[in-house]
Image (tube, rainbow, N blue to C red; front, side, top):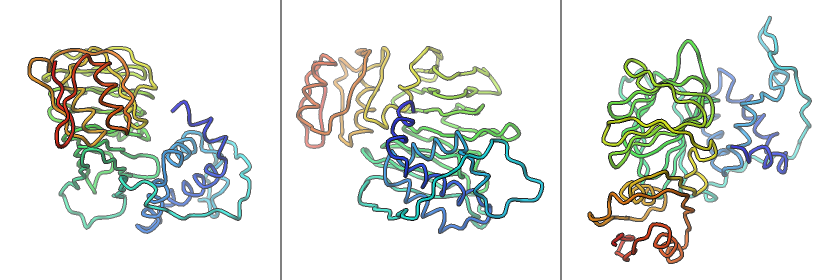
Length: 319
């Protein structure tokens, strides 16, 4: 988010590559193999996704790179010279991010009305591309459904995902999750539906919560949270906190331990449970997820005021 501009200035070759990919997949004749290759390029790491985000946001004079622009088509943004780079490498290196898998749904699927279901295991992440400027990044232990016939729709059945959406006023992007509906108004937003807790947090633009009922607008720097599907609470947050799980950071404001344990398990891949007597104990602060299990357990004990008992698959929090 805010770090991407610094990162991309330090690695300008990624902007070159991102521009090439933006031109390539924006072509209406892009093939499934083009989309698969694009996904593998994104698969190389966070820096590639941030570079592509910056290209989408700024356009970087992409119109001037089109070999055969349509007649009468005009540039909305003045062209910017793009440095040549004859040594670009498109090696994908899937082993670099072994837990990240990617699926592309933008080409025809035979007209099947069935939804495509994508699922991640705890500790696994996944990216779904719904077009050159719209994608979904799934956290662990998450289930997302998409419609091959409608790239402006997704359903979050369980877990957590962040949505990067190119706004279309005439056809807004819609997310359904349980009994709730979200409609984008040009935005980047994170949705979580787990452990009796539903939340949507917005870092850019805004979303409309239950547009046919409450019509609650959630703006950038805000989060809407419901517990047991009731009593929506709107509060201010730091935009950098949205989808912090992507960088191993979990932000909380008066959250119950039961929800925190679910988040930790989703991100770390461990099975984490909480004793009933402290499941509603509250915590406010930031947790940095550490890959070192022993160090992480000690940190959690200090932060949460609990004891983390080792189990075969993870930890059990007790008083």
